[in-house]
Image (tube, rainbow, N blue to C red; front, side, top):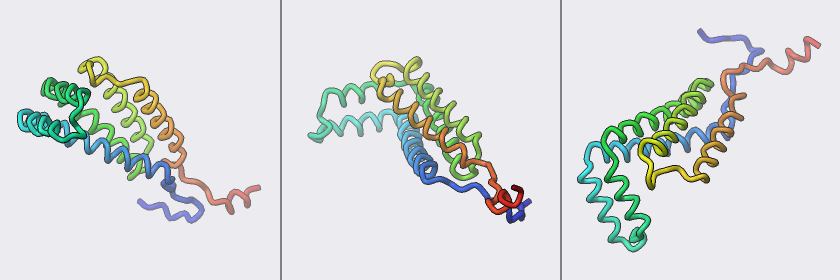
Length: 164
């Protein structure tokens, strides 16, 4: 049912909410695709990523170590990573499309799950650095600051002035 009361403004998407949600959905979608490819085609993906070391830009010891970590991750661990990335994607989508605060909670749970999986389940070279943890907390706080734009119909200023 559509509310036709002209004195109530529908919530608007703030630019920061729009930008954060789209960037988050892009990143999570990219990760979902990458993890799915490693889950379904581990040999082919390992070979393709190993071929990258022939390119001078990627011919680095740290990059080789990351490749080895990705090749050593078990399928069920990729499944967990895919699930939390789906939660992160869905949370951002719900916040942007439906302007519903439940999206923020789903997103935050997904980020906590990602932290736990990377640091306690997989570990090694994929553990989150302090910079990554601080950055993640900062993004969560930015999303939290945008909760005011979600599902809070605001009365028109004229109606508020009439009541005074």
